[in-house]
Amino acid sequence: MLRFVIPGALILAAACAANAALPQRGGDRSEEAKIARQLAGMTPGKPQDCLPRDRYNGMEGYSTTILFIGGPKKIWRNELIGACTGLSRDDLPVITSPSGRMCRGDRVETRSRIGGMMTGACALGSFVPYSK
Image (tube, rainbow, N blue to C red):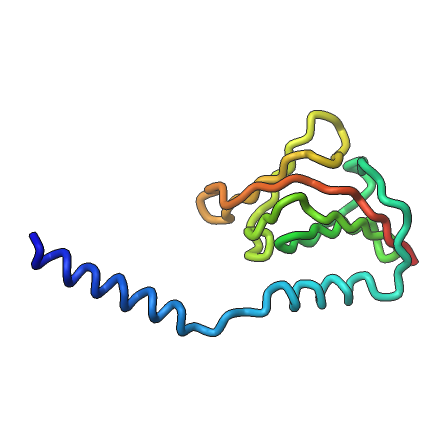
């Protein structure tokens, strides 16, 4: 039995060391830079607790932020409560809301595009409108 445990432990240690040697991405900084580019030239407004679903026609997800795109002159920035890191990997967001609008505290699940497995969960924060 011991002759199987030692090689297994060595393989596990080698895999961990190889993973630690990989260069780490500057995910937070690059995400913030992308968000800043999206919102450049726009003025933030007063935060709102809810956003009707028909007010936006697209979204861009980041690990701690979702941008709801309402057109070239209107974007709502939502700082998530918790982190949905799957959004930065292009996983699908599934927003559960009991009404026809999304509100602060509504649950967001991320699901893998392949297989639909749940990869994370967080909640919506306040919606800050940005406009030109």
